[in-house]
Length: 401
Ligand SMILES: Cc1ncc(COP(=O)(O)O)c(C=O)c1O
Image (cartoon, rainbow, N blue to C red; front, side, top):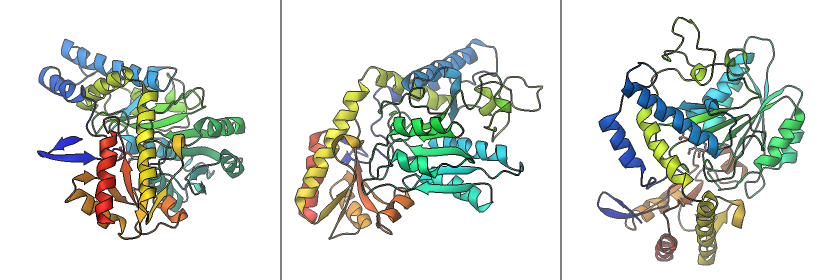
């Protein structure tokens, strides 16, 4: 149970953003703003060096979470959308004007932060695109990815877990398929799994991994990152790699160079970093490191499974997504009595239960499952939810349906 605007709210919208945040986040941001909120890497004074140290320590923590080989391979961005755009546009721009139309394989499950940059590039003739279907539970079959690959495929983009249905995708098996093709790069959208799912970029042959700070990492909004792997570029010559720097500007380093500095992470990090966000994210990552992610995932899965079972028992309710351990803490459902938006509004007022309704920025999976235009009601759990929150939503639905 979270407290918001003095009204008790049952917050079941953690897939949109986690709330509450890890308890250490707000004090860390406050402490940073009051005592050390200066520009890192721009000046040699001690405060600036202190801020730069915080940034590098945070990179290290994030690199550890996904078993990255070098913390300089974590690029800070404003969030997962920015990271996905950098990865997709950066690769497609490399091919633009070279007389080759790159082929990209992705899936119907993806979020608009993957689909929209791909559709925009498709409209401009910069890419040929194959979207692999999913099964009725939102699962992507690695064999379908293998079948979609062509000799021109340069990139495969797959989400770690569907934000619409909660389905955890078989990243290891997909990474193997992509690595065996020995050409395309593998980009993972880890928005719903960073810090929670067992992701090992080296074991799973992941070349690029985009993540936000504010969802499963339990940090603030406005900060995220992109992991850039060895097959994409080397640490000291990213300028000649397949991934072009989409933005350029000041980095505080190599200022006489008319181009972006040819080293990681500076090559892809123009402008002043969101150090306030990084201070909060550092505290969140530290908090996560002290709590067992496997247990946290099991907790969220058990709440989701309980909710799915109890919703099914209500009658007149259809629950989507896979069973038991194949999902993160997300449950999507529809009812015979209400369109999703109407039901979500009623859960909010009078019941004070925060959920999300609609297409969840993932239109193609809803189209694929015949759920247009209304989509679903989505409840999504975080580490601080309890069974009493499941009780609250089930009791409200018993009264409404
Ligand atoms: C699967 C998925 N990918 C990408 C994003 C985009 O994340 P952000 O809005 O933090 O940029 C989201 C956000 O909901 C998401 O669920």
